[in-house]
Image 1 (spheres, helix red, strand yellow):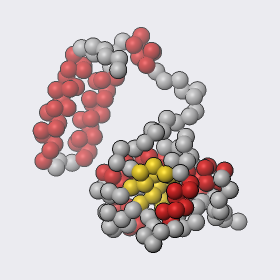
Image 2 (cartoon, rainbow, N blue to C red):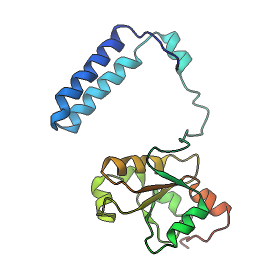
Image 3 (cartoon, rainbow, N blue to C red):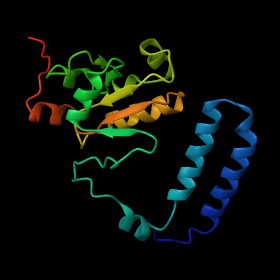
Image 4 (cartoon, helix red, strand yellow):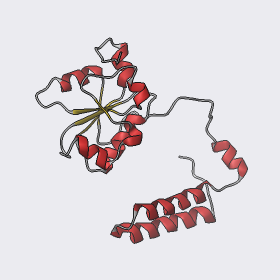
Length: 182
């Protein structure tokens, strides 16, 4: 990891984060924490324009970086998805794609819950049992929507999470049956 000395801004932000950990540990509002974290992020990104230019990502690259694995989550391929859906105790299958993507097809029995609508309340409507298996998918390895949805589910206390990383693209590519609205 490349270490840089950010000087005052970095040290102040670090001290502020330590302060937040102690201050907001008592359950104060999420908004207050968000504001403080935003402030810290702004401080950490403050720096010379030369160092920022070296760290600016190439925005012409349209690929979204998706992790290889998500800690505490079982990653699956299409065949493993078929296998787990065929068991006596199948997971709740969640399609984290936006509705426009779902119109091009979706895996049978999947529930549409776009990542932008995923929160503790919407998950609770689908699955009240925090230890029941939940399997998330989106458009494929370049799509981060299922990753976002899984992280939200984990933060809501859901524990038995599965990720179909290849998503609908892998499903369709391998010729497995899917549903389309016509």
